[in-house]
Image (tube, one colour):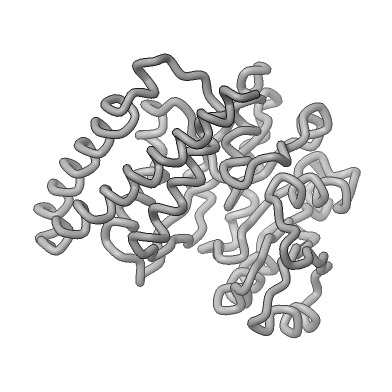
Length: 290
């Protein structure tokens, strides 16, 4: 890829003014030239006024119309059609240095790679268990090899030619990135993780918010993957993961000498298990009616 060709950066934003300035500053300071497009979903926190003062192309996503796959497909058609790769970055994902972009797109050196995703690190104010989850999911990438599939659109890039053969699904509200990358893997493409392409990104969910998130992910998961009777059972899908996570959290509490993590673990992992189980059942029921 020519070093001077501006790389399209698609930033999805909704009421993230608190992070938007930091993120744009770091994106504009990258070692490679960029062409920034912000897809703002009816923000009411002053984001529109702020974006008007920056050198970015703003695309409005009206309130009530946001569907992840639709916005991603729309972005692919509206940014530079000659760009072989398109980069996606959430507005609350702040690159840590000027090499974030170069490290990310270097993942396409292998022609078999269809999508690349980078490392996410917790922000300093992130609560312990959410910080642990972020580091476990990303980190140096060593744990990903044991999972069925791992990807995150929050800091990522995709090969345009692959998207042209298989656009994003528009009938799911969660995990559209997991669905797309899983399907292209079945087509023979590979996914690259770049641990040195780093952003700060984390959330401090309440138990209710955490459960809601996992409901959405569980619902999507039921439709994305194939499931045997054992794999979707209460024991295999819900109880065993819950026990493994609590055990891991207890070890983390001992290591960090923070016993408050013990109480947080039982509460949050319980909310996670219940939300994900309910979502999976809802997704499976919908799948059976198709």
